[in-house]
Image (cartoon, rainbow, N blue to C red):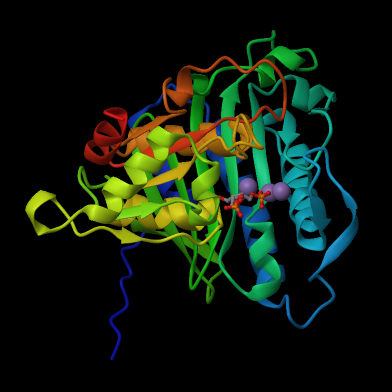
Length: 334
Ligand code: AHG
Ligand code: MN
Ligand code: MN
Ligand code: MN
């Protein structure tokens, strides 16, 4: 018989509890997280019945990334833009699926202090085969003056300027995980009440993990030093912290979520054909770099800390290495 934990805090209750500890906070960020949570619930409903309704497959166009857009990419993007436009905490957004930023430019939005950059649907290639997918977001305090429409500069801030970052994983259960400078907390969607409930308080990633996640199919496309590191992972045994396990789903959200909880390293290096790798700095790398650092891990592009990179343009790509501190330090020796 299952026991019911009636003490569990919902996402809203948790953010209100945080507000009580910091009476000067205005609650704008709490509202923004609540808005994103609402988009997540709507996307979740669609993901859950994907096989039954006409939401699988291609939308019939390509996006600014040069990828074939899926119907669920479009749906998720519309939900994210919608909740943030209709909320009162966001002045504008940037999305993997949109050529340019959207400046909301109405009296309420112009008074908002945040902008949000997001990947509305991560793991598009897994949609049609019922494998976990996600949504990723990073929240920045705008640098342009409040009271006016936000500007391009607000969206070109280094990841270190994020005030919060998070993701939703539509998996065997649906979770929302978000980080602020106060820590990382995970909430599981209780479908019976339609609320995200605090299930993983104060997440810390293990200092040493045993999982490495990389697309092995690209092995001969990687730089020799990366190849050597991967080979080193394969050679690990009991005498030197191993053996390691290779796990790669191909949805960054799922791969990063598993490694965050269990300990591990995730890599998307540059390849011979993609000099700056595949992952997008503003929508994918920065949010996860912020989350993993707040959980005690590290994230780099192979040389530089991801969060220190000054973006030059929207949709910029970056090689990405992130995970447990000990494993990242071993990678750095290569
Ligand atoms: P998206 O679906 O948002 O375009 O992102 C896909 C990304 C990411 O989720 C994943 O880590 C990576 O693509 C997998 O790429 P490969 O298939 O090249 O390994
Ligand atoms: Mn995509
Ligand atoms: Mn993605
Ligand atoms: Mn995407």
